[in-house]
Image (cartoon, rainbow over all chains, first blue to last red; front, side, top):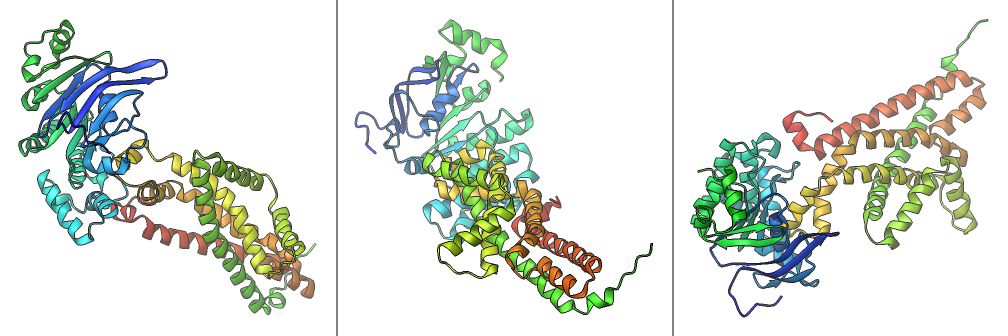
Length: 251
Length: 227
């Protein structure tokens, strides 16, 4: 654990390299996320955006470069993974709720097991975070009794219960129909309004445009274009022009 | 050709039958609990990346699965004796049956572990749970749930196979039957009764596993999805 003195970023990637076999997925990726900022990673399938996100929580080990997340040197082999992951919340495309546990148990498990929270306190916490995502009444339901959108909101609540300093969203609405997508996006919008620092990989261009403070457009493992959300409407590179022009920009 | 069956002559030894049946059930219960523990540990061990752990686990599982139970029982029985260790026939039988069923349980549990989606483990890792906590809270019960019918069959099979323990004079049901038929010369009747008792013991065990399933998997009870 070592603070990067040159920046007070919550997340910073510098010249990150990552290959799967001979395939170079990340080819010198750099970006930083400030406290309270919402950063959207966009790009075609295979552009490296999900890999970049997963590197932040060390679900992928990088081959080179530097990643600092909340003071943790994530690129180093001796990084304290459990300390890192208490500071970082991650939500996946496939929800990944634990099917054998009720929603309440899903939420209270980590605060009790990892942070040693008392059971009664954890239950109060579960109520609080479920209220945040509008699912108070599902406290005692099992995941399979919930719709996809509800499951994803419960997964967000589960992450929030660990009180992370930054949240990562990996295409969290890609498995949902437009109506369910809307209810999940509403929850994320509220988090942004509350000042949560977030990095999201998304295909919802309209949403990215509305919520993101900054856009990082990835292309062939590199940050191809970056800037405020307005770059989506007035892109400067032909690749981004083509990307947003191919019907990706829903209002 | 006429078949004459004289059940009363055999049934007057009903206390012996009962004692044998109880001992068989005790053998099965001990070996089931210990074998489930041993097998689960062996399955976890076989799945680790440390060859010093996974290697011996693999050798254990493959050795046991490729030798007859009776030979395993003799190996434990005479092996302990030649080391100068004296154990009751019951203890030896429990040990041998545990070692045997542990290997089969390991293979079944391994299938259960492999059926847990990778995303479940990633989600748990993302919540900062330790490896042990992930096994305990996230993997173990769903894995058991996925292979529960196979486990039930394996442990019932173990109970039936425990009849081989009569060879080292553990006084279980089959051993009792051997004495009774040599005393009464009513072999056919004796083994008919023994067969019926084994069926009853199997049903008792299956009922036990069904009840245990209700406790272990409350979601199934709530949602009404039977195993």
